[in-house]
Image (cartoon, rainbow, N blue to C red; front, side):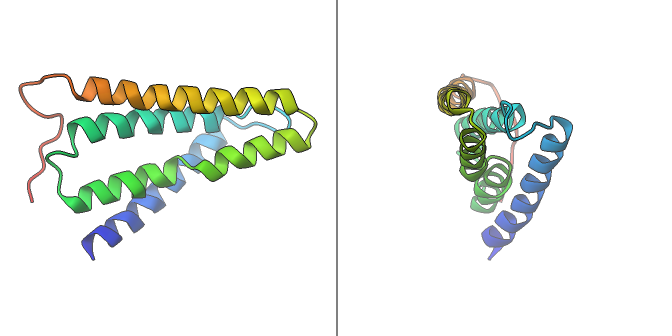
Length: 131
């Protein structure tokens, strides 16, 4: 039950953070969705870093709350697809393809970078959590 509650709380916080970021970096339906791209890149990097550095020592409820909860609510495939469909519907087919490719390449690259940085040897973990 603790993991479910952690995902619930993390999801609320992640979704609110995504909305706040969208409000800070607004875009119209026919322009490049910079905010969604940045959100997905930052979230991908954070998840990669956390999986490499924190997951091995974190209890299950922390992994659930931060992974599927916070970062799952912050980054979302549906937001990416809505941007692609909206750009295409407004006649910006090339821009929608550029955005989709950039999202995939940069998101995967950011996750790989996070994993690589997180796997570096370190005397102590970034965050030490005990159960």
